[in-house]
Length: 346
Image (cartoon, rainbow, N blue to C red; front, top):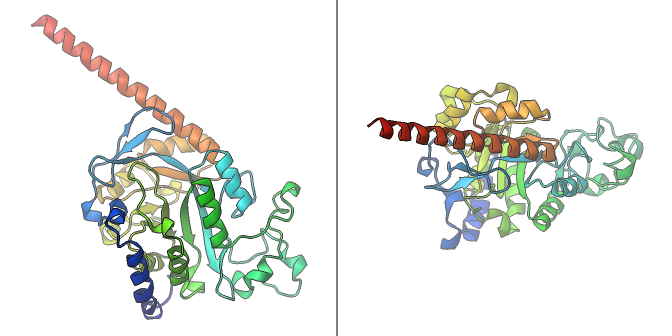
């Protein structure tokens, strides 16, 4: 877990006050800040036709609904270098609405976008800094990390692609009108990272504004470290938070402060999805790249999923919703025929 609570609690007051001041306007006090018990807890069902307008019955408020989405994992990391601006641009080109990225802290307390806690797999750090092994992210300054090539290891066409910081990612996503699923990576290595993230987000009130209840969440913060996730939620009370990993069914109610539970797709079945929905939470499993597995996971009733190939995911969702719509129409037609036959017999 993310370290002793007493090391973190002192960070809460200042950023909470700042966040609340940003959200003081009545126009901003809408569904994103709802307490879990205020949300609709009916298990979602699919309605509408396939495509961008296809919706799910609302978990969020009264009659509102959100679309099922395919979240671009580390950007469109199946076709571009992960956690780079190029991967975000690629996700936008492929029609993704939401991007997932990982955030860590450099030695000079800057928020860097990187998945591994070392730099070696995705950059040329061993060539640029041959004497700095084991190349831990937290041992480098942001200026040093900016010297690295994060694209060549994926493909020569991406040579020279830099490692971005969180501010650059936020700006690029806003430019594309895209949403963010932000993972706090290994917070036990970075005491205070929750406050740094909250401070950075508070610089852009756009990211703290409640999202429209019929669109994907503008921002969700998540982590495998649930203590860190809860601290972040206290710092950013208007922002929905997610628990990465499998919460045991009999413990889901303990995490009613959260908005999502996002386990591996391998741990998800219809009964578990139902339990999450009954608790008023949403569920978006990770990381699914096989179209048939995407379909099987959609059949369990999830609210979306995370994938390296967002275009494939979007196509599968569209096909799934179209099939569900046709099935619903066929059932309605059969019911009408049964009613007509009953009236004839009368």
